Length: 167
Image (tube, rainbow, N blue to C red; front, side):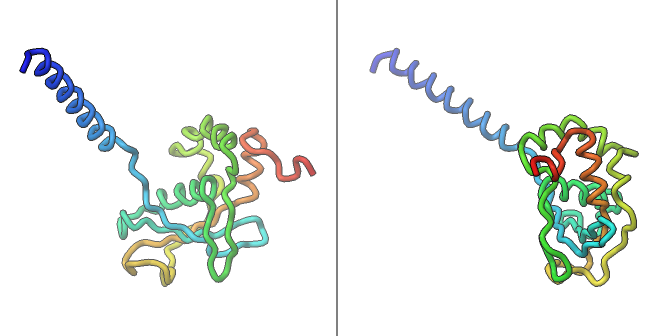
């Protein structure tokens, strides 16, 4: 066998090895999804929606402040599943452009003392927990969110379009 063949094989193996290392590194740096579980608990005539929320990965160590932020985040980005007392609540940020607009204010909005806290009021532990919960020892909170006020806030900041726009 000639020397050029071994050099070519050596380079190919080195290249393949580098690709494998790069893929392993990239997969280890992938963003970690938070396993927040939410459902609409009730809707009030005053424009508030009550969200039942829990975090299976945190279990009984899930903090109230995190639950309040996560409830607002869920309503914005994913909406809420329905329950016996409440219909499905669609997400507020309904398009990619609205999500991009929100990304411009997101850091300040969710900061400590940020505007997110203006849209939640009473919060309590849900006792008994929803039937869909796997472990009765997990902390499950009921968080009230001023959905209409949150929507108006986002409209004024031109993050989303008014619901009456185009009618």
